[in-house]
Amino acid sequence: MGPRRPVLTVLGSVSKPTRRPAPRLRPVARTGGGGFLAICTIHRLTGAVRLPQEPRLRRRDEHLSGLLSRTRRLRWIAHAGLAASEPGGAPTRETLAEAVRIHVDWIELDVRVSRDGRLVVRHDPRLPSGHRVEELTAAEVRARGGAVLSLDEAVEVVGGRVPVVLDLKGPSVARALGGWLARRRDPEAFAVSSDAEADLHELRRRARRVARWRTLPEVPDGASLWVRTLAGMAWRRRDPRGLVPLASGMVSAARAPRQRRHELLHVAGLLCRRDLPHQLGRLSGEVGAAGVVVAHRAISPELCDAADRLRLPVAAWTVNRLEAARQVMSCGVGIIVSDRVVPLRLGLAGYGD
Image (tube, rainbow, N blue to C red; front, side):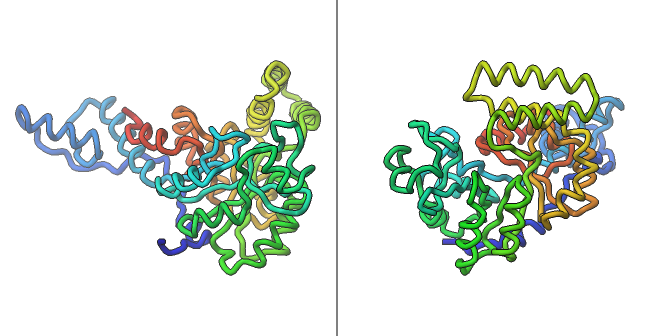
């Protein structure tokens, strides 16, 4: 078992990827045949050698060099304990062991509380029976929802080898989780994240040594509240363009209830993208946030610049497509939350080709 890495220490090591091109290097003499091809290959992979080129090609290679160096500075969070393919997004011992094995920088666990006050790890709010987790005891959750780990069991599997981000899901979690963290001897091995200001204040009171990350935009609990919230956002903007994705998202949500949350998050990200950079200082300061976790559709260069001025790390969630990863990286994001860490790492290794 390796040593624990304090979350705050790891957070302090995160730097905002630069969007500037790589520094110019001195040209080298053109060689013949295989030597020239070898130099081209080295240059393509590392950006370490500068060849005499047309201006257009030179700009492309400077861009590639910068992107490769940016990829090396990326940090990764294993979303939901890599449980996207598991029923209800409930991580298993196997998915958690896999997250440790692939050397992510953090593992995220979605924490809910049962009716009898037990903390369990599951992404989705409802079981196949239709019951919400908080309506059942922990034993009933396991009986009806399959192999749902308790928070203690999940943390035991991780074994302190990777810092853990605890994402609060549902009502009453903050009080129970605050007590759980206060009893631990290693609170620095955890961070907490939530979109609810009240929950983060509760955790600040109960577990002050635990880093708090604010999730943006706020995610209301329930589709009807989502609709009212998004309609209000579009109306306040007085921007007709905001109504188009809103209407599209509502139609998609109505046709595919299982995708409702995803579709509405997409719309929320589009609507708040313009205003979020100006609100970031207030939203982070309200809860003493150590970082922000932002829906990838809401990421912009302006947001990353604002976060840099505030010395706030920015994590983009949930990024599972290569195009989305490239987009948030180009904005300056240094942390990616993903269900597909390994495929994205492999894809980004050739970013710019």
